Every structure is written in C-alpha cells, then in structure tokens.
Image (cartoon, rainbow, N blue to C red; front, side, top):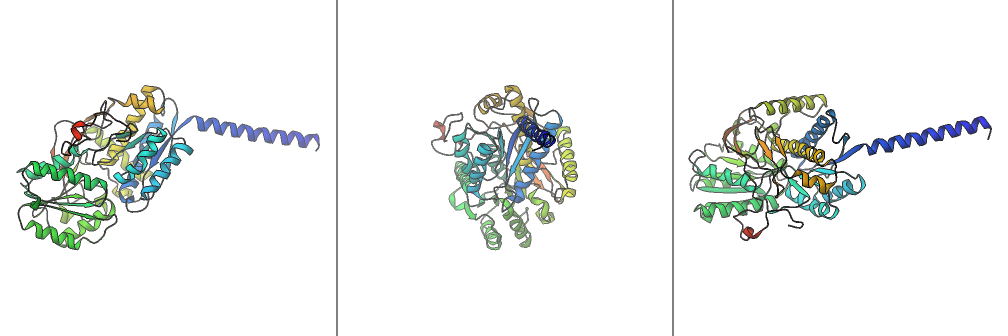
Length: 421
C-alpha cells in the first residue's frame, strides 16, 4: 500500500474510533429510564397516554438540566397487553438496556408478572394505577391508590344520603386479580355495614369483552329489589361497549348509578357521554380540578400532544394515572438528586418522605415505610362534555393501607416493604 493510502486509512480508522468513543461517552452521559406500557391490545386505550405522559415529563426534566447533570434517555417497549411478555420486556430493560428505573404497568396481572423480575434483579418500578393492595415490595413504589384511598370511600359515599342511600350492590369487573380482590374487600366491608349477601351480586367478564346486553338487563332486574348501585372494576376497552349498553337500555344514573374505578377522561373520549351524565368515578385526581398547578399541567399536556401530533390531540385530556405517572417520575428524579446517584438502594432510601406539589391541588408524600403515596380521594360525576364534576373529596391526603383490615390476618402483616409479599 502506498504511503498516502496508508495515511488515509489510518486517519479514517482513527476517526471511526473517535466517533465510537464519543458515542460511548455520550451513552454514558445519559441515564436510561424504562417505559413499560401496552401500546397495542386491549389495554392500549388506557396505557398509551401514560407512555406519552412519561415522555413529556422526561422532556420537561431534561429541559431543566436533567438529573445529576445528565439527560434522561427513555427506552420505550410495548408488552402488548400480553402478561408474560411484560416479564420478558422488564428483564430486557433491566439487563440489556441497563435502565435505572422503570415506569409502567396498568393491570395488576401485569404488575404481578414483572414483580419477581424486579425483586430478582433489584430493579425499581413505579406503578401509577389504583390497585387491590395486598402487596408491598421494596422494589416497587405505588403512586396509584390502595383500596382505602378509592374503593372504600366510594362505597361509603354511595351508601350516604348525598350518594343516593344505596342498599344493593352489583359488583361488575374484568376477570383478574384486581377486581376479584377489591370485591373481596368490598364484600367484607358491606357485611360490616349490615348488607346481606342477597343484596350483593358479583359478575366478571374476560378482558376485551364486548357484549354487555345480558349483564345490563340483569342489573335492571337486580335493581328492582331496592336502591341499587353498580361498582365497576371493568378495565380496558371493554368500558366502551359497557357504557354504550347502559345508554342503549336507558339505564340512567338517577335509576342505578355506576361508580367506576378504572374509567377516566381518557376512556370517555370515544363515547357520547350525554346519556352517561351523573354516573360516577372515584379517583385521586380529575382534569377539572381548579388550581394553578393543574392549569399548567393540563396546558402543558395539550401543547405537548399538539406539538407531537398525538392521535386525537385536539381533544387531549389528562386523567388520574397520567397524573400519578407525572408525580412518580418527578419524585424519582428528586430522590436521585438527593442521593446524588441512580443506584437503586440509595434512591429507595432517598424516596422515603419525598413530597411533591401535585396537580390534584395537594402536596403528596411518599410514605416513609410502605412505599405508597398519601393521596386525596375524589368522587366525580360525568358531565356531558366527558369531564367530571367533583361532588365529594377528602380534606387531606390519606395514608394508604396496602394490607386491608377487611381481609383476615392482615393485622399481623408488617407495615414496611418486604420481598415476596
């Protein structure tokens, strides 16, 4: 090879090596964070917006300098509403992508699927959705509600004069661990209030169920026996045909109110809500709450949805799990700053007692021992524009009870996170 060619070859290989080095340095200068939400399948209707909210929040944190001087780099995967695939994707995020933290899951069956992986690999998961409790892992921080922060107050409201003085309860849910465990707790709670089994009906449907004609007819029959309320733990895209069938059969909130634990502004976007006015949802946040923090949160989200060309951006809405996602990411970032590290053990320690001024209008605290947020409870009534009017709320955030007192033996459970709970 001629001398000139040798010099060219050497220069080229040196340039490639330098580029490779700069790429590796660049990669080392970011902090990878995992986003684990179903972007396809039955749960995509609920989870896609959580992925987008996570990306917006990460973008905002990066715009302010990132975490410990490093930019956050989101790694998005799609477990496709496939519960075993959640475990595979979480292992991939932790072992191959080397993420510092994962924000994700909606259904409890997906969370139960990934939990052993996070405990085995000492990963960190932020879970943003209301759930059945009966769990407290050192590798999970729960930013959604436990039953005493949603389900129990909602049923108490329905039994009150303001809530319609319900005497009979139709418990309708999707057939998996969250509805079944929540309804086990609610049945015990109703028994403690003197409600007999004959006044409680319990029905479950599979994920993706679309035909609610018979079930709504049965609700009408059941309601003939006395003042009735429906407690809905139906999840995912099944909510659309359920609410449409309520309208088809003319079952109004004044006849039989439905209180939902998994229906918010996002799920109502594709439905004509005029026939649903007066039905209820219990959450810890609604888009309609009026305070300066929420006004900015909602405006930021609408602007982000428009700028990114998200589907339905002209009708973009916020909801409770989106707010819980936003709060969780900020709390993790605050804890990593406090710890001056993204090391899981150091961040876990720094998270205890973290506070954040949330869009709900309350300053939320991460409990010092049980890994759950202290949260306010709100009951909202569906309006004809698909928003909710808050008809009842707690004065202060409530501390979560992951171990429900309505399940025997829970009084002996520890009030701190232990692996394999």
